Length: 393
Image (cartoon, rainbow, N blue to C red; front, top):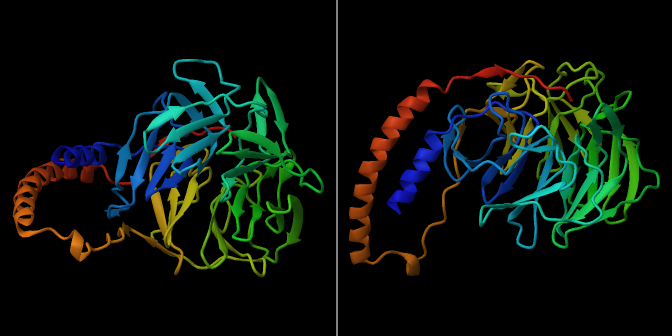
């Protein structure tokens, strides 16, 4: 037990936060996994998780580094699925073997089993054409829904407008309805509502950008497309490569993004009411993040966790940011939920309690020494850092 605790501490404090964009995320058991992404500092795409069972300052997140995936992955999309909901399915993007100049064109699905910590690229029949710039959502039956995206290899670009459905339990593909479907689009956000409607916001098309007022919806129960026009203040700019999360009370909070001219947009924080379909841009407080794009956003309890991304086309962030969705405040500290108290039948008896106290005393002495060593070193490098390394979309 002591060795496991020491190993955990070392993995947190010895891991240097990467500077990435175009990564994927997945949340399993309060572990927020960051998968792949473009990193100009190394030829390996990173793989690590943020331990949300631990409290931490945003300047020193509780990261745990993991062994890099067998292939490099950027611009992909990911969902948690499988028979036990413990497997991360990463679809599409750009993928290549390390120390290889050739891109992988088949094997669109890579999986990571969070229990066994094993990677796999299962052979799957009837794979679609590899693509990127799309976002997947998953329903309670294990179906991933992925619309559009685009292909860009060998100086050839093609935008798609098909709805790909992949079942993470049977490992089979199918195609959604083509009737009344929207035009080809990439760089949008997709948000699955409790009623089975996927809401698509923004994105870019081959000759422009999708207006923020044009809301596309796909009904996964009826396999049908629909549209609505959202009311919005005129000073909300259209955007792509932004992020979005759904709050329990039905708000879609979007952050960041870029315009058709590849410059950051304003305002950076906008909110869609999914009942009235009206946009707003509430005032937000605290230490605000820079205007980002190609980053990630994940809802954890009452927190919208923003991860990494490009500040401009030349600078990439190495930070996470945390927004309290109840009052739109950017927090500097994350407080983990307290574990459930032991029941009377689970409480330690006196002999075991004495042994536990002795063991804890020895463990704490060792842990404090490690915390002092790694904590001081980590504190010195906890300031905000950026690096050069823009990438084209």
